Image (cartoon, rainbow, N blue to C red; front, side, top):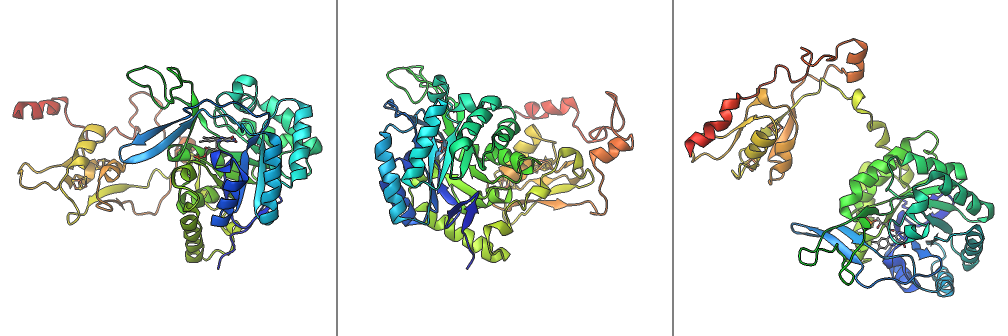
Length: 446
Ligand SMILES: Cc1cc2nc3c(=O)[nH]c(=O)nc-3n(C[C@H](O)[C@H](O)[C@H](O)COP(=O)(O)O)c2cc1C
Ligand code: SF4
Ligand code: SF4
């Protein structure tokens, strides 16, 4: 059986699955219940001077049949007194000494940072996470993303923390920034033991069309919230990759957060360099029980691939993430329709004719609804295979002989790139494009 345990910057946990700092980690009751269900660690709901929250706090994007494809909140840090939280941290550690309990913190002054670090250390926390991410409310008070967006300020606060911290420190980054490397470097240069990301995106999930107020509506008004859930995963993955590849950051352990719901999501984060992963929205949606499938899925994946530990595949996808200029321009795929699977919906035809390269034809005979690919027109963009509702009905077939590799960079060095507006070397220069009049053919049929 694979060993799922990790030693994350000195924080030991039986598995890499941690609850992110959020409502599921609001109390000792919830964290004990989660550990009992199988979670390996928990980042406590951010501690600081307790707040007053508004009622009506969450909004969501329900995409077609999927509830909460994107999730939005205007909640602040903990509203519970510090002493209550500290007492519960101590109790949780008594019952679960081998699980990771990480105290998320957000305070203002150096003195407050020094005091609260001592408090959580005395309570028995295994690590500290610095919350520089909240994009609502707390940033108006000079904390949260107001710090995360200012690398110099972030570095100064990390340095204050490192002056006194006796346990490992994770700096949690905000994604509300143009280049994630800037705060990432600031955290590392400030001495942070580890990095976690992402916190939520500044967002408006929708407007009520009767009251004209943004969701969630608080007595006729709203404000920007923090966006998370499945919709944010691609952006978070890209940011994790950026940090994991950076020469000065790559040796700093990363905890990946954002839209994780299944074991596959978690594996993707680990393949891009994360060592632990944190989950919030999926637990708020489905409860702590999802850990059973997440854990067994990871175990099966590791068994199938022959991995003994998380470290055997951590970062394994990174060498395959390159820059566009290094991609092989000789690689050529063409769409292929499996007629035995096709249901004749013709979505592929519509997508290709209106949104791609007019490489699919449909029979003039209305009885025959299966479209046909015109190989020589197909640029291999994948669009038809993505819109096709039948699994594996449209596949992309490799057509180049797989014997040569020529990249944009190679062609640049060989002076073989288009440099003038009407350059013969342009990729689409000799590609089929219908005549403009062809657009009106369909009209004449009406
Ligand atoms: C309702 C809610 C409250 C949150 N509160 C905190 C918080 O107190 N501290 C913090 O660092 N992050 C907080 N977060 C952000 C989460 O920890 C996490 O970074 C984010 O939700 C992305 O993960 P997900 O896509 O799994 O939800 C909160 C998120 C939600 C939805
Ligand atoms: S989208 Fe798929 S199922 Fe629909 S017509 Fe095209 S190939 Fe057939
Ligand atoms: S891959 Fe792109 S160009 Fe080729 S048939 Fe499909 S949609 Fe058209």
